[in-house]
Amino acid sequence: MTRHCLYSALYILALTLAFSSCDSEDYYDESGSSNCYIGSATLGTLNRILHTTVTNTDGTTKDSAYIGTLTGAKYPLSIDHAAGRIFNLDSLPYETDVAHVTFADMSGTSTILIRKLMVEEDTVFSISDSTNCIVPRQLTVYSPDYTHTRKYQLDIRVHREVGDSTKWSQLANNVSIVTDLTEQRALVCNEQIYLFAKENGSTPVVLTASTDDAANLQRNEISMADIETHNVVLLQNKFYALASGKLVESTDGINWDYTATSATEPFDALLAAGSQQLVARQGDKLLGSKDGGQTWEEEALEAGGKLPLDEAYGLCFPSETDAQYEDLILVGYHNNEPTIWKKNIDNSGTDQYDWNYYTLATAADTRLPLLTATSLLAYDKGLLMVGVDSDHQPSALYYSKDGGLHWSSTTIPQPKLADGTTGYVGAVDENNFIYLFCNGSGAVYRGRLNRLGWEDISYSYEE
Image (cartoon, rainbow, N blue to C red; front, side):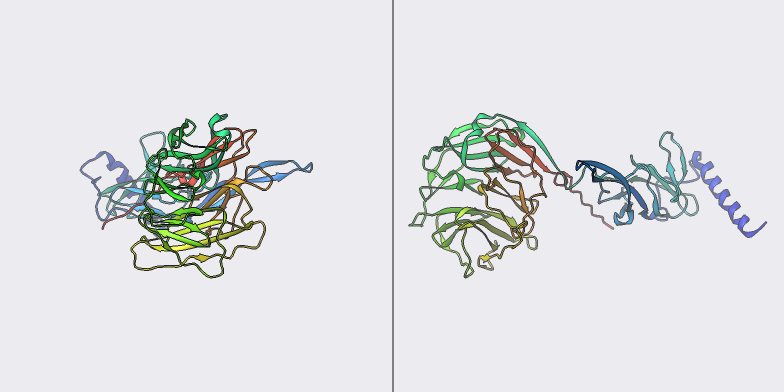
């Protein structure tokens, strides 16, 4: 007998003993041991369905699909020995073929078995075989002496939708109290939507609804007739606005009172609210208040910058680099030219920063277009702006990932709007849903980027 045949015979004998021992409880221990584990696992080359658009000779287009490949090693498999799990923390892209998964590596202390799909029976696992991982599969690995086994659940996860696509739902049409609103501002607080506006061009109202039933808006007249509804901001669950240039506040959006403040001159605009402060414009100055509008201090501005005078709104973002910091961004227009300012805020009070003026992109296709009836929203760690364009039509949903320097009209596509829509106001809730309330048609839409609805799972292990 050759050496090769001898080794083969010994390997077959070992497997025979392993399988025949499955019915003998005193031969091996299923509880596992430190010398019985799967040490490494790597996905191989996978297939994925890809889509493209084909233009016909007559100018029409149609969708076309083809098979592409994906390098599975770019999606590492994690092995949790304590829980007995092998899984990819970062899910495979949409339409990856997980019914025919190949592996570049699967190594254990000894033989690895896989449970069949249709019967309670194991077979030897081989990385050269295609494995159906539509559902989790059970793996069993033996110790070198075949006296112990350890079981793992193999879970290959794949996204069930395209991450950067947006799904829109039309919640309602012809909501009459939405059709003729002007000077609008929509905010979300404690899972409630507050839509501030002027009705018939003069009567200030606030429409309220739960985020779970956004089309069921309830009309409430605001107690203060001269309130500037498009200037409402939210600070620490309290609403602030201007009424004939004076600061007013409300806890419910309906009943308003004047704020006791040190400001002796009227404000021109209430621009933004951070997590701890208000920002207002007074002529060519920005003023800030850190005590709910009671006292104000002039903010330091970079020389030479132009403050936003029209369609001016601000947003606050948590800093990407320090939990104590946040960024305030102001966006608007100065004599029909876009203008953007940014300030870093140290909420610990240690450092103080000036407002910085941003030089905007010069390319027409990435420069913020001139909009009116604007909504500025924080979304996906960026800025989302909607309004009415220069043709007096509902604008695209313009998105900026870099603080307003460059804008795209394709990142978040507009829903198919109901006939008669002349404009809309937008709001975003804590679950990343965008709400659009349409003037003219009275339609209400809700949508979000798919990936912002995915569960964010993190794992930690203790040795």
